[in-house]
Length: 112
Length: 115
Image 1 (cartoon, one colour):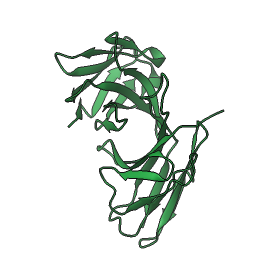
Image 2: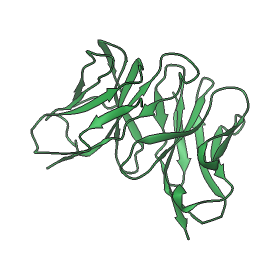
Image 3: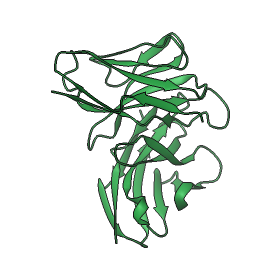
Image 4: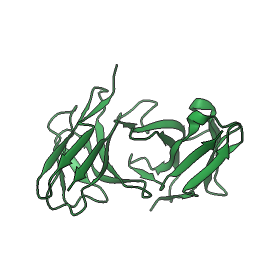
């Protein structure tokens, strides 16, 4: 069985500070990992994904994530937060059956 | 532009009534999914369909029904048997092959309120 745990349901950072959103996964098969962003009352938008190959993946809006198999982690980072980054972020894992399993989400607050 | 549409954006119903949520995609994707989102619980899979005229139950299918008569459409019916229907419902689709085979594309969602 696969699962995803996002550490911290709310994260608050100052504008310009580093953003770090944590995600740990459990998977019995090589995982495909995703980060999605959701703005209020909207659908989910894919930020980035890891399937195979390079373990450091870059996404949209300056975000990146590193797949660490030994730590079963896929943490999301951005060097400098913008006010527009305030949203809810979801980490997800899937096998090659295509079903996505989501974490509970982390709400990012950016303070001026 | 290709994409996924869900209508309506907001839906209000009285308890005991069935209600159908629309999901249409023009991305030519084979697979389609319905998720339910509640605060603090992430997204949970209700039903999914990998091909026309076939669908499978997800993790929380009780009180819901779907159909997949056309590739473009995957409507979800919330029946009166669903005990807590008030939620945000998201539809997604995924291609069967190609470089984006593992990416699900999401619609804008329908917020259902049942009183």
